[in-house]
Length: 618
Image (spheres, rainbow, N blue to C red):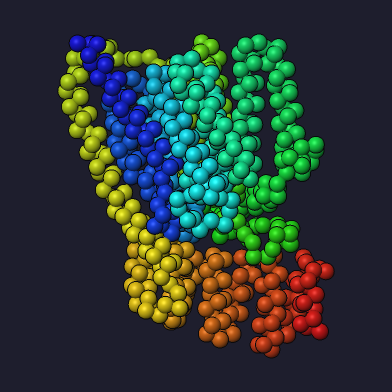
């Protein structure tokens, strides 16, 4: 009887872990071609829906767990609660609550995204053990085969979807070559390390070798170096630790070589040293501007940040003058391209510190496990930890992308799970569990679905609205054109549907204002632009839209007012000052025009714009 109960318990646990891994795989692969944002918004919706079932299991596990939380597990749980609560408070205090909740357009790194990722980590930390950890390796291989095959099709011009894609064609299901490259790299690493695990069958290893070969071809063809860097730094870490396990003296030698190689690689990315020609890429170097702007945002608002996922709205305020002079006055960024700086800058000190603490605890747990386990078990853990380290390496220079980040949180949760199981001891007699097993099983079977359904209801309402808005924007993008006047009425209907939907992305309203204008609804368009600036008066996009609509109405005072507001949130925009010179001249305010010329010369002397400013006032 005891054996039968234990078998059933293990089967239930195995089924729930299968659902966890199904969720991770599905979110990575999923996209919706009839969405305005077919990748990020689609993945967020699916993550939230599938998480509902996991939340029921998760809450049930804390409710019914017969083993008390050990010190480390309690500490990790407390850190995660601090992270989510402080992130939610920062969201509530954000200038734009909706952006804080769902995230910036084409990013979706708002509160809901991180809440969904936290559920993945917590569930993994309570459901995975050494008996099912190989499922993580197997799932990664399956997803890797799908993504690499799709990537090869894209490289060869055989994509079955005609993406509106300004990038390299190799975007897989992530929507960007950098993200695709990094995702394949994470999966390649798990495949490589899985080949060293004896308990994984030969068939797995044969498929892994084929996948690794195909994926590396796709990564190189993507033109993105991020994937190669992820693999490089992870392999350095793996073989450094592996060498220490085998032979301490050998380990010291390998670590020395690895540190030197790592330093040379970092210098190469920064356009210094012998590896510059191989590793330097301007898109990597420019990240220094993004990081410093993020640090300045944090200094300006250390407690709550500038607003969850609101980096883009504040970037031009905090960017260095060298950035617009080098890259252009209208070029901007919506992310710090460094997850740690991004969280400190947009969420504040409690969000940033709790996230850092979680990273440190996961790293500590992995190293501790490697030291305590036998050689074979250590290889399993080391593979997970080294891959997780590769993910963290890319997070230092890249944006959180739901499809990739979900693997980082899964791996972190898996490492914690193995640590928790390794140090756990039952504090309740096993016979007591069997005596009450039947009654508890009935309660558990009712409790979990009820909780999941209660959570699912509001998520479905939100997701349904989110789905409709994404689809309506996609339709509007296709039908809104002055060359098709017969679409005028349908455009108005779809726009009104979007504008009247609760919690709609403000940028989508901004796009609707242009759709209205294109179809001749100029007064309606003007109202949308005006309402948006009341909602978010510092948003650079909305201010540019206001300039456009005021110009079409020949409202000189309105254009001047909008450009003056732009000068406050974009102080290094010489192009805007040049336009103000023209406007002040038309308005016969020559004193103000001279002030604009002096501003341009104060930070952009000798440039073409400075010369044009001088000519205008000569």
